[in-house]
Image 1: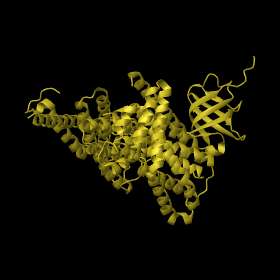
Image 2 (image 1 turned 30 degrees about the vertical axis):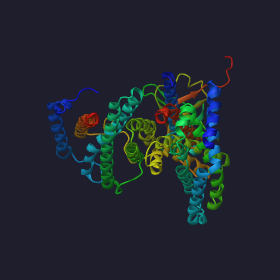
Image 3 (image 1 turned 120 degrees about the vertical axis):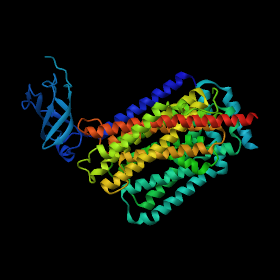
Image 4 (image 1 turned 90 degrees about the vertical axis):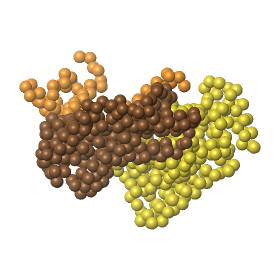
Length: 123
Length: 242
Length: 234
């Protein structure tokens, strides 16, 4: 077998390893879409997906703390706290995925991922 | 000797074609040769089946009547399959060395063709084992399968993973002197991740709960197979060639 | 393989000043572990925490030894020189020793701290798997008589097990919650300065001891092989 086949094989193995690690990471942060489930998994790292409720967002420029409300699949709302710079498209995004933990009745977020609106309407 | 006859007939078949078709036909030729030898003597499959059936019965003697939890049932099922594999899968290479047909095979086909053929043969042996053992186990242990599709997928992937690790270990052990115990000792570290994943997944398929989700188990088993089979394809010739 | 003098000075393996330094340094670490390092807060037996000064470096060197053994195994398969295979085997046997030491110190600490010697914590499982791999590796080596075949087959096994070990050592502990603390070494407040110094000193001492013993055992294997060749030639 030529050297290139070995290289290719090694890259394949590395690829599988990377996929495996990613799989493990998603295993440790389960995907949650209801507040009830988030409550059940309190103090454990989760990924919570919800719709951003407009009009209930507050952002403190100096301490970089973003407080907002998310609505889950069943219509229940939950308060979320994110420490960091407010993402530029926060006001236009409709769905957010929060990676963090459910603690003391609210979501404390380490990471905030915003999903852009799926329909691109003309302005 | 008819075995030599058959092997040399396949040799003409193999060396006459080249490229990918030749490669695949070599793999199939090895598989067919092994299957023919096996169906003639039925040594390996009978050892494997006998072991599996006796251990299933032994396990379910005390535990079957009480209706065990899914965690225990899934663990025992895979332990039975694993030890049956340890009992039977080493024959694929050890037999070649003991009956001195190995040098012929080394000349007749490329190493990777031999590996893939043996892998296919071991996989089919394990599938045959599963077909006999699993229904028996389910009936005797009285465990319910709440997700049959997942269960079958796990059996398939798990058997592939076990045969991938075991085939490589069998090749390594075929050149050693104390073959039986060494085979189980060597395969164990290689197969532990696969075993753990298969057990977790089967636990979920039987209605239990596990840290990993079913999708996780299936994906990770697939990646395990990918890693082991790719590594084996790269390294097999060092074990096989003198 | 190069000419070997029948009488090797030990200074060829490790220079004398370094030898003295290693001896003194490890002695200093042992003394420091008992006299300089304060008893730890929050542990069941406050004095028992001292064992981590020895336990953690042992475990790290065990993993390092296995990694080096796998690297030499790959080098052997690429180049085919027996020196690489000898180094691979030597590193593996040394790694086995460190793994055993790490397991024993860990079990002692677990017994003192949590009351049970073995807890199925993921890191404990990883060190157990490492022990099993080493044991299987040496069983395989011991049972193949042809030296070239032995080298090739054990190198292949080393690599295959080496591909799966990172799963146990790096992935599983992060996946399953266990008793081992996760951030003590890397975070700022995990270790008080005395512990940090003692731990660093033990790490350095063990590393240099590992290198020294490795070179020594490789040299011994080379001597044994040369003597075998000479007796065959006669």
